[in-house]
Length: 462
Image (cartoon, rainbow, N blue to C red):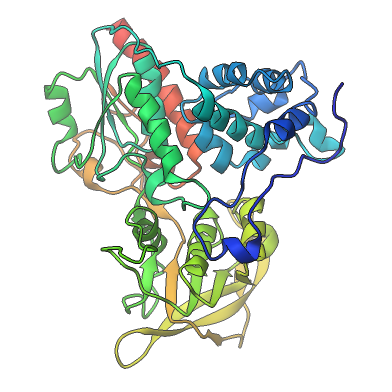
C-alpha cells in the first residue's frame, strides 16, 4: 500500500547543542524501515518530473521502487547507471531546487525524500555488498582528466566504464577536490569520499596527485604523452575578496583557506601540524553553502559568537534551506541586510572588529534579485576577532595562461561551445566550476557526464 503521509519520514540527527561541538556527521541516516516507509510515498509518476530536474538523469522512480520492495542492492544498481558518487549526491545535492522541487507529492505536502533515499541506498551498498567491481575490457584509447573533483571524477568514471585508459591529474595530495577540502566532515565524511574514489580506481581510473597542470605539466605536454582527448575539471579555487580597507590584517581568511585547513589538514585535531586561530567572535561574509560551512566550522572550533553577514535578506540567502536551518539550530547569528565596509585592527595588526552598514532592497538587478542599497547614516561596528570572506571564487589562471588557443571569458572561466563541454581547442573539453564559476557538486557531475559522452563520440569518429 502507498504511504500517503503528506510529510517526509524524519531524518534522525545529532542534537544541535551536541553536534555544534564536534565534527561527526549531523544527519544520521535512515534505517531500513524508515527508507521503505519513505519510498512508499513515491507515486511512480509516468512522466517522471523528478528525473528531468536531475543533472545526471538518475531514474529516480525506478530506484525508489526497488527500495519500497526492500531490494536495496537493486536500487543501487539503478543509481550506479547514472551516477558515480551516489553517497556524495545523497548528502550534498540541493534536492529541494532540483529533483525534489519537481516532485508531485510536493504540490499538497512535502516532496519524497529523494536525497535521503539515495544516501540510504549508497550507504547500504557500501556496508553490505560483497561483489567485486569488474574492470571493463580496454578499448585501447587514452584520455586525461585534469582535476579530481566531482566533475573530473564523474567524467573519468564514465569513460572507464566504456573501456578507456583514464588518468586523472590532481594538484592536491589527495583526490576529491571540493569534496575533500571544501565540504566539512559533519556534512560529508571524508571516509565516504575515499570509498567512492576507491570504487573508481577499481574500475581502472588512475589518479596522479601532486601534479599541477600549467606548472608540472601543460595541456600540450599531455597530448605529447599520447592522450587523445582531455577534460578540464580543475574547479574554481581562487578566492575573491571585497577590496575593502583592512583585508590584509591577521585574522582575515578566505573561506577556501579556512575550510581547507580544517577539512583537509584536520586543524581541529589537538596534534594538527597546520593549526588555525582559536577565535572568540567570527564574522562570515556571504550567504551561500560555503558561508554556512565556514560559520558552522567556526562554531565547532570553539568560537562563542559566529555571525553570517549578508547584504540581502533571509529570503534571498542562496544556501540550501537545510543548511540555513542547521546553522540557526547550532546558534549561528544571522546579520542580514548588512555589508562590511572596513576591517578594523589593533596595534598588533590583528582584527578587532568590522565596520558595517545596513542595507535595504531596491529594484531587481540583472540576475532578477533585488539590488541591495546602503541605508544612510547606518554604520555600526561588529565586535569580532576573525573575518572569513565567502563571496565566491574563480578559476586559477594557470591552465588558461599556459594553454594557447584556449578561450576564456572576463571572469577567467573556460568558454565551451555547447553542453558537451567542447572548448576552442580540438580534443579539449571542460566542465564544472572551471566553466561556470562556483556552482553545485551535482551540476559539475552533470557536466562531466556530458563531456564523457562527447569525448567518446569524438574519439570513435577519429
